[in-house]
Amino acid sequence: MFGYIRVNEQELKIREYTAYRSYYCGLCRNLHVRYGRTAQMMLNYDLTFLAILHTGLYEPETEKERKRCILHPVRRHDSVQNEAVAYAADMCVLLSYQKLLDDWRDDRKYPQRAAAGVLKKSYKRLEEQYPRQAEAIEKNIRLLSQAEQEKAGDIDYVSGLTGKFLEEIFVWKEDIWEADLRRMGFFLGKFIYLLDAIEDVEKDRKKENYNLFSEWGDLWQEEREKELREMLTSMMAEASRSFERLPILENAGILRNILYSGVWCRYAQLLEAGTRKDKKERASREEV
Image (tube, rainbow, N blue to C red):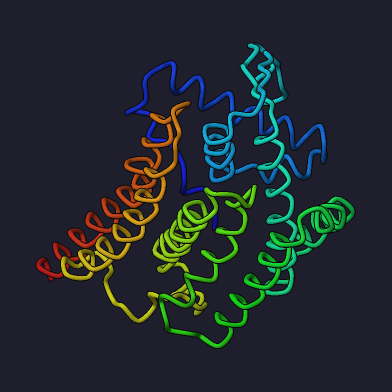
């Protein structure tokens, strides 16, 4: 489900890309050192965004290291470590554990069950440390699974369940910035869920799995695509509006790149592929 809140690399300056990678590497290293290889494999771009966002907002004391890793053994890379990165790593473990359990319940995939078992001890500790976030993740993933089993068709309700647990994750400190962080997390969560459903719709139709857009027909037909784009645009507009109210200077260019451009990269790829497929199908029908 996750991995859509990422940069548009082509639009970043070199120094901005280097800074972005330093947070990604920092989160990766933090997960490995504190939680092990299994947690490290749960690394995603969405929580990298969160680490950069909280660093810019709260300006915690930050250390930079140059490290090698298994994926990049030849060259050293910058790695950022601070309390915001550590919080993002904690949320990654909380979220990954519940998602692994949900996958196990739905599909009986033994690798997911095994990975959840490895993370269980860390999850229990984090559950005590972050009861608000842990409860929101567990409750709303459960409600989401229930909604999918019942084949719920209410787009706002179903996508909003992801928004509800992501808004709790976005609130690190309950302070004057809480309302805007909540709103950002909520609408980003809805955006993530819907974009994931759009990407999976053809696969879900073939397997007869639940998908909000299964009955929509051709998503890339002009009017349908317009409706999808307007829906997603409204969500990103709300998230971006909340972001702009936050007093963030550090790495603001990276965050704006993600919110205004990066989140649309995958949608653009899906649109291009869907449009190309439609053209081929029409050409095939005309030949017949």
